[in-house]
Image (cartoon, rainbow, N blue to C red):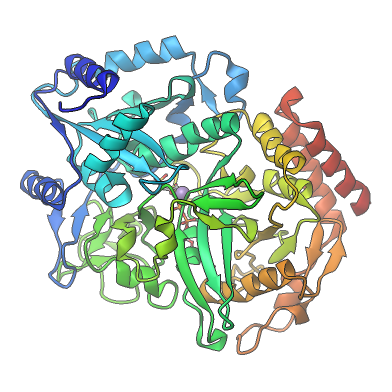
Length: 579
Ligand code: GTP
Ligand code: SPV
Ligand code: MN
């Protein structure tokens, strides 16, 4: 191992000894290295070639027991349980370490151990943070190459700065009984065993950039959030930057790559990020954000030329597909692709409709951000972009209106803390069950939510010009299950109202839950909506909201004396107004 960082060298040595790895490969992040990983995986059967129409695209089928994040096997290991909070599974650090050491002992016998230095954020950004992932999975190496800035430049910065997050990963035997994703925030350490899938295994993403980073962000006065970052340019050339937090599989990738419909001519969208944002307030008091990632691990099903043309085109070259189906012509296939037909399902079996969807509902693509024709060059700006507005949202067939605006920052924090959303296939377990998912961070906040809300509220004490906060819901339905709002590209119409509000130009009516547009305030020209749909989408029923606020109060009470008084006060104000 060639590095001047002595503690890195020592750690790599220790891990090699523990795991009995046959060899150590320090990854340089080059294209040749990526191709050699791909070649090796084609030989071993971990990857399959796809039809030539999909240039440099490969298919990976993960173990059928290993297809999504595993929240029940994900732990935050802090000295005291209250630090992790009721929002996390907790294990005492020494006990967790002992458990993990036993699992890692000898687990790489006869195999190569890859050492991946990576940088989350532009390599020259003061907001960027470093990490090293050690893994026995060439699939992880290839994905980290597409998703992060990894290799020699990251190692050089680690050698300069000294500080980095240590992530140790092994796919192990994929036995769910021996699968754990452990976080040790005080030691800036992650240990993941027994999964080769997405957020469980690509440790730079959720484990580092959200769970460990949220802990650091509290200490250092910033925010690490499950947010997309996008630029919206008006026909007049004015640029706005939106940061939006929606739970897993609730529309971040789609919004970040939005294609303006013909009716919205002149508007342009550029993507900064589709999953994670790090927000800082700069010396002038302006909130700014960077995307710590450099690629996308996105939901495949539902991607087509009408919903997300950008992603559809972007994944036709230099992409890794995980758990999609293939056609008889060996092209990747998924539900709602709207072309071709599945021949082989995601498990590699001949497709039979009775066996469920052909592509796994959480099948994913991995591509570098540079594949995205809408990728904003500002994503490489070390200073990040100035945030115009923050948006929270969830997937709710009932109650939550299409859009509403917080009265001020603290009320916005209450709105974020109260987010509820239907569960999706992004995590194992039931789908479609409404649960609280504050700030879309339920699976990702590395510490007690009570303390996290306090940290959010604290921004209002320190700063004057914080961005306004909104809530959106693209997922309202009628009794027959029909979506009331067309969604996707048409969401731009809602973003336009938000932007006009930020500029003090758009109209709104005050309600107890926040300010809403009247139906006439949203441009619906050319939309094929049924009479009354928009009215339903913008209705606020005080009685229903009182019930909702009871449930919110109940939820907050789970956090005991960690719940900030400021949040309770905001809750009370809304309840009084609803009465
Ligand atoms: P993660 O990567 O899991 O964090 O998810 P994400 O928030 O990036 O979700 P994504 O954009 O991939 O969307 C997930 C699913 O929601 C896909 O099947 C989309 O087709 C669907 N979806 C996204 N936007 C909309 C919308 O505006 N309306 C409707 N009805 N569905 C949407
Ligand atoms: C999510 O579940 O929110 C994802 C996918 O973005 S994963 O990286 O697997 O967590
Ligand atoms: Mn996500």
